[in-house]
Image (cartoon, rainbow, N blue to C red):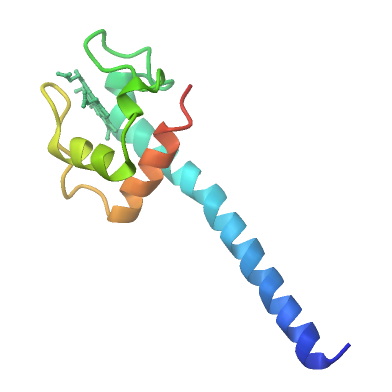
Length: 103
Ligand code: HEC
C-alpha cells in the first residue's frame, strides 16, 4: 500500500469520526437549549408542561420544515415567547433536531 493511499485513508477516517461526533454533540446541545428555554412550559418530555402549551411530543405541531419551525420559534405565538436573536442559527438547528426526537 502506498503511503499516499494510507494517508488518505487516515484522513477520511478522521473526518468520518469527526462528523459522527459532531452529530452526537448536536442533540446534546439541543437538549441543553430545550431544557434551559422551553421545558418549563412544554415539559422535559415535550408534553407534560403547562396545559395551554402545545404538545411538542405528539409531532403534529412539528409537521413542517425546519425552516418554518424555526420562523415560528423566532416569532413566538401567544404565550410562547419570541426567541429571535437569542440563539445562533446552529443553536436553532440543534434545538429543532432535539425537539424532533421527543416522542
Ligand atoms: C412561557 C411558556 C413557554 C415557553 C418558555 C415556551 N413555550 Fe412554546 N408554547 C407555549 C404556549 C402556551 C404555546 C401555545 C401557543 C398558542 O397556540 O397560542 C406554545 C406553542 C409552541 C409551538 C407551536 C406553535 C404553533 O405554531 O402552534 C412550538 C413549536 C413551541 N411552542 C416551541 C417552543 C420552543 C422551541 C421553546 C423554547 C425555545 C418554547 N416553545 C418555549 C408556551 C411556551
